[in-house]
Image 1: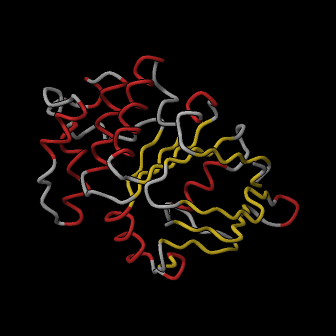
Image 2: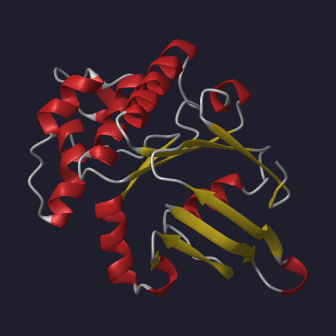
Length: 216
C-alpha cells in the first residue's frame, strides 16, 4: 500500500513562490491500477515524482506499507527506488549511447542483481530482435517497450508511468496500455499520470487533480 498524507510542494521563495501541491491525501492499495488525471500544470506529475521518491515534499509524508520514505537518506532512497519502484516516462529517457539491452539491464547492474527475467521480458514486450539496436534505430513504440522493460528488470512492486502513451501514435498507445493492464492483472500496482480521459477510463480508479488539489 502507498499512502500520501498532507503532501504540499512549493518551488521558489517570496513573491516568486509557486505551489504545485496543496495538502494532497492519497491511498493506493496493492494491485490497483490508478489513473491520476488533470490539465497541464495541475500538479499530477509533481505528485507522481513525490510518490516515486524522485522529489521530496515541502510538507507531508509518504508511506510504502509501514516505511516512510521521507526518513531515508539519499543512498537509502536511491536503493529503495531501484529495488521497489519502476518508472516509465513519456519521452522514454533511454541513454542514446547504449543499446536497448544495455539500457534495460542498467538498473540490474546498479543493484548487482541477476537479470534472469530479461529474456522473458524481451519476449513479452515483443522486442527480442531489437534489443541490440541503439534507441535512435528504434521506433517510438519500441523505445517505450524498452523503457518498460528497464522499469521491470528489477521486478518492482510498483510501476509509475508519466504520460506513457503521450508520445505514441494511437495504435502503439493502445498496445502499451494493453501491456500495462496485463501487468496489473498479474498483480503489479500501476499508477498512470495522463491528461487523456480515454486512457484513464481503462484504469480501475481515477483520481483528478486541479490546482494542486484532489478534486475527485
